[in-house]
Image 1: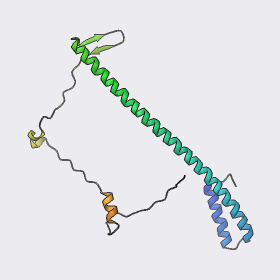
Image 2: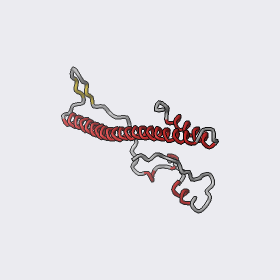
Image 3: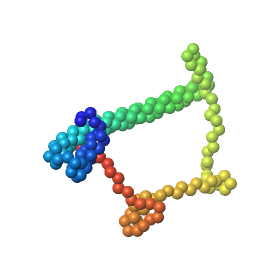
Image 4: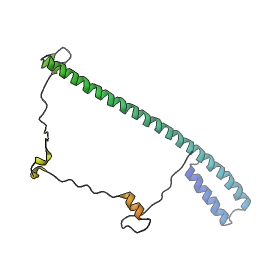
Length: 164
């Protein structure tokens, strides 16, 4: 019986319970079978829940590592930007626009042109665009559904496992 999947065991348990209701098998035989199966299902459930907790722990550790690496990446990018600015500032102060070595060629170049808006209120209307965002206020609808019917939506209560 232990080689069955949890789904198969539940299905077999339900079949045995149905057989008992239909009086196809003596009650004492079914009771013994159901008790044995019930224990096996509990054992499977315990093992599956232990595996779930193990995966949850792995997920938490991976999330923590992602946070650590994200912070490290941010610091490395920041340091690299600072170094680039440091090098640019010092090359400009030295009056150098180009440095060539066997490994690198460093050259100060102009960036592509970028627009700077000094005063938005002075810009002609033809250069303006309107952006409208419409979204559903779920918390207001949920509150309203307690006292009224709101067309196009309903409340659902799902199920989840709680493993402690």
